Length: 274
Length: 322
Image (cartoon, rainbow over all chains, first blue to last red; front, side, top):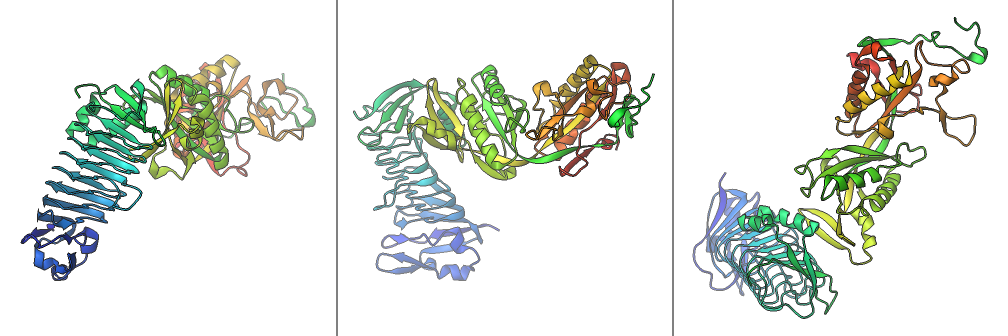
């Protein structure tokens, strides 16, 4: 069996919700049935066959080829299987997913993995704002699973994050890990202003020193904590850059805050260039 | 010279005829069985910056845990773990704790970890029971976290939840839960020897061999018991009392079970996570004890049981010759 592949025929006239193209909903359906599945667009309903040409038959391995930023909610609510996206994915990729794997060979829009509870999202390019946050209007961000962004992430990455891993190899925008409730975010590159803004609990690990930290974070000292060693070791499965960061066993500068709210969060900063 | 009469059922050595299952190096092994009981058990992996600190914690955590009769639980060091075998890559010691109920085990796990591992510099405590064999889960860090007085931090790492409790040398890291398995306690055998020195020497050989078997502990001091017990007592408040049948100083007064030439007896008690491991430990232990034969002063091997009416697990010594 070969992967079930959806090749975009043309750019849709407006944004389309393609969350229906996930393995659990496609399993057991014939090519003909899949062709007729509805996809909700802006004031119109598209049929899968109108937007995509279809190849292959293994619904547990789905490929969306030639993706466009107008394709929203790719893999949203996924409950298993593999989904590969080639091209630029739109907003809310992997939103509320519970398990399975999404691999994006390209960039993704905003709110990638918003509210996700499990599974893994791996983005080879850049991610927009609010990666790993909550869906707009909700009070909690991602609550499980892992998001790996090999490029840069936009502002508010990890906003209201509740649990899980948000790993950014490149830089992150302003207000990284803002309003974080718990979980772990790692940025190997630079972060913008006010990282950890209103962070209540959780861990933010920075591979490079930020220009300045919020005044509501207190310096706790330089530590080599066992829990952080275990945490870093667990990141080695997420690629070479995390592997070399973990294996360098950095002694980390620990800052506690945000004292503007609960103050039980920690920002751990590796020594080195800002 | 043999005693002419033994009053009140007393027997003297030489009147006892063991039903022999076979001989090991010329040492007769009685055709009997060790009777063991179901217990609840868990394994804890204790690590430290150095093996010495891990060992300090492990020794303390398994102290005063020889018998559930008065200690509440039975515990011991299972083995030393290399840095490749521990979750945090540091030297470690694995310990096993056994109790009669899940509730008792929870209580003792919490107390012993809290008082002996949490308190020991640099140490951390991890669950040592794989998920697939855990029958149920005990609270480990989940119970100890309150020591952090609100400053404790929970961290989910690699799918496992850990608790980070602030202590004066940094943080005590502890896995949230420990797995419970249905273990077995009370596997045993008795070394009947000509004198105390021969009995101790045989017991030491047996213990050294048995320490290499995984999934078992020998909870008594040095792995050896000199005060074997029987069920009940003339005193109503005691549930167990000295096993007078094997006490050499009571020969002539009681129904002695000592064969001729036996002047001292030592027992080795084994608790294990499964019957196979206990059987293996008994096998290697008995063979080691008999090494050197009767010339080494060992005159017989037997095992303790209650007629098969109390414990569901029977380890027959004749299996040594199967």
